[in-house]
Image (cartoon, rainbow, N blue to C red; front, side):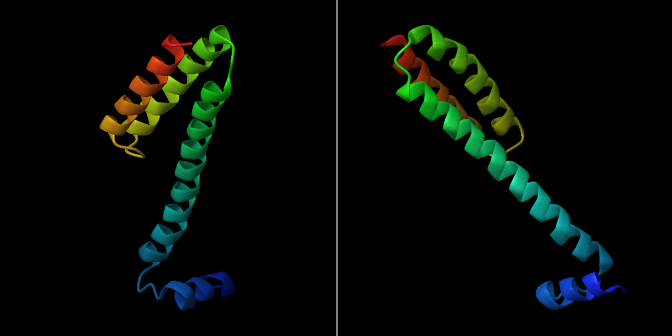
Length: 95
């Protein structure tokens, strides 16, 4: 075992090589999921702060796509995605 592997064993007390790999892959997945969720939240904020309806409509299409992908990958619940899409579309329609 190399020096790096021993560090993982000490930090996470893994008993198997597969458990060490799982720790590394879970960390990478968690970072990716958080990035995607944060990007979607930022997009929603842009829509809410935007004054121009045409720009909001173009952002709306992009945001709906993001929300659908998040729900498909189980990053957020499908009902939450649906609720967010409904609220945003009502907001844009009332502009």
